[in-house]
Amino acid sequence: MKNKKIVGRKEIITILDLDLIDLDAKVDTGADSNALHCDDIEVFDNEVEFTLLDEIHPSYHGKRLRLPLYKLKKVKSSNGQVQLRPSIKVTVEFMGKKYKSVISLTNRADMKFPMLIGRHFLDDKFLVDVSKEYLSKQIQGIK
Image: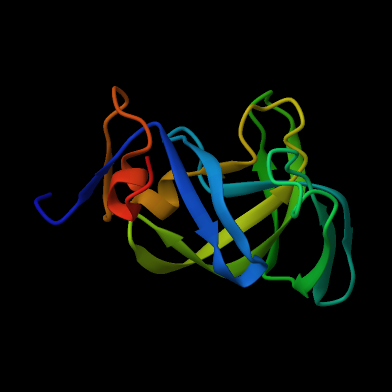
C-alpha cells in the first residue's frame, strides 16, 4: 500500500498515442475499464475508426482516427445496458508516469467527462481519495 499514489475523484490524463493532452477524467472504481468519449465508431477487420468528441479542446473535437483494434468486449454501461465495445491499447501519461492502457470507445454524451478511468487501470498502482480532485495538476505544476 505504501507504493500506491493517491488520486482524486477527478484527474487529468494524457493519451500520448492520440495526442490528447490534459483530458479531464472521472476516476470511477465502479467501472471495470477506461472509456473515451467518441462517436461514429466503425470496426473493420483489425482496426477501429472513430471521431473524438471534446468541445473543451477544439483541436480534438471532431478529429477522426483509425487505430488497431485491441478487442471487442461486452460492457455493461452505467445505465445497465450491455454493449459490444471496441477497445484500443495506448500509452497514457497519468500522475507523472507513462502506462500502457486499454481504453474502450463509447459515446459518453450524457456524461460530464470525456474520459473515465476504471478500476483495472487503478489496480495495484493508485488509491482514490474521493475528497480530493486534480492531484495530477500538482505533479504537473498546473494551477
